[in-house]
Length: 639
Image 1 (spheres, rainbow, N blue to C red):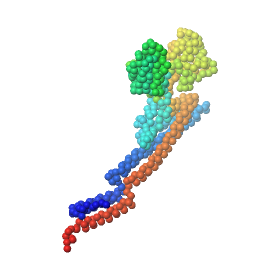
Image 2 (image 1 turned 180 degrees about the vertical axis):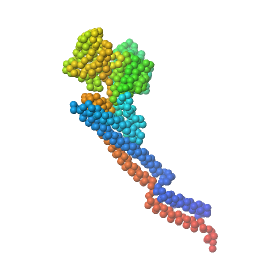
Image 3 (image 1 turned 90 degrees about the vertical axis):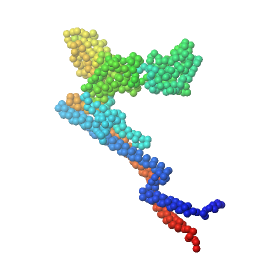
Image 4 (image 1 turned 30 degrees about the vertical axis):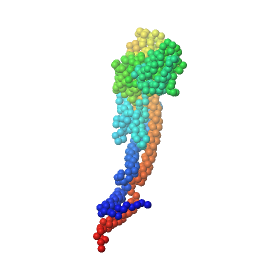
């Protein structure tokens, strides 16, 4: 049992007053707090009211604020994609109209004047399509990609250039969801879809400064760094290459391992690593711990190279980078720096390579030529591609008397060009029997049958074999085309004519008059960016020129455009539905979160009113008690 202090009965007036005041003040404070809860509707009006619940409420409010942002992003994305969907619908209608124009103007019953009138209608379709491709929503171009404030399709050099980007803008739609809200304008309209693909493996050499990340590796799977074991047959060491950054780091690490007289260096071929040692040494290199570093570096040799034999590594396949020296291309042979000529529609430029030292210099000179092309390193990292970004124009890349374009693999027309790829893929139209007659200045004729010939070089060889000494064929060293040279020195003029109504001479580019003793053929292998504007332009020109075959070809291209856009529109519609579903899901989440927040911070009025009444009663009782107690004194008990 607790023992009460003897002093308990001795209570001073000051203590009695203090206790009464504190009791009343505490009740008033709780009463005020409850009154605030009733007036604000919030149980928590300051963090001190309930620190734990206040922290939870703050987190819930942050979540709601984030979701408001996500909801706005979803709304904008849905609006953007809906507008794209609508625009694609309009585009399919225009393409249907263009196809109808084409089909109704094929046949002998349509006159030249009717086709010219139809060309004006087709031109109107072209103009509407161009306007639609540059459609905006809230100041943003729908089909410009991440260059959203720049007009994506502009008429330039006789064609339509894609000035937009293939990279779409993205936005965040949930805590962990980031999605695109644009559609690739280049994919929709077909630009840039065509390129001069570099057909030369430029095979750059390596140097001590070559980075490991710039190697495809001997296994063409990159270089996965780890440890290797190097041995000379007597001594061995584990070499840690996990932190190597360059070829020089790899070579130094091997040489610093102190394995007899084993020395690593760049091999004479310039693309591999070589290990050499003394005359009796048998060099071997093994993997450590199941790694693949030795194989990737091309120096894996578990059995050993043999006594006194250097271990010659495999090609580590260095890739082209902006800093790759032009002198190191093609296994160190470099390239001719004479330069080349780019012609794209009405634009033309001479690419002077004098003073160019690196791949970056080369790309900058091509991309700065204002010819509507874009040069880039190919996906494999071993060549150069030049894209035609302008629909409706023909891109040609020709030599200027040197071999620069051929060395880089970007000459658009050359002896190795397949006949089937000429004239925009139409090839060379032949007939049964002979196709072309070549007559020299002595009047001696040679008939050329193209049956069985596959390339331009085959045609050149066939002419040189069959035309005796009167005519020689070659390929242009300046420009592009077959060159026929008359060596007969006769009184007549070198001539080329068609046989059996064959179109082969036209398709080979040699159906033209001689200039003196030479016929220099046309470039018939231009690269044209295919797509909506290219095909609409072809249709307009074909109708204007009364060319039924070209009308049919344009119609086929427009059908491909139509099918592609219909598919993209279907994908866009699915994305619109996805955005709608995400909005609904986000609204449901917000309702649940708001309910939880209400439970945490909102006032329970039933409980608060009851508590308010209780506190009122308590306060009244406390004040009445205090009034009676504090008014008592010894005089009240003296009789």
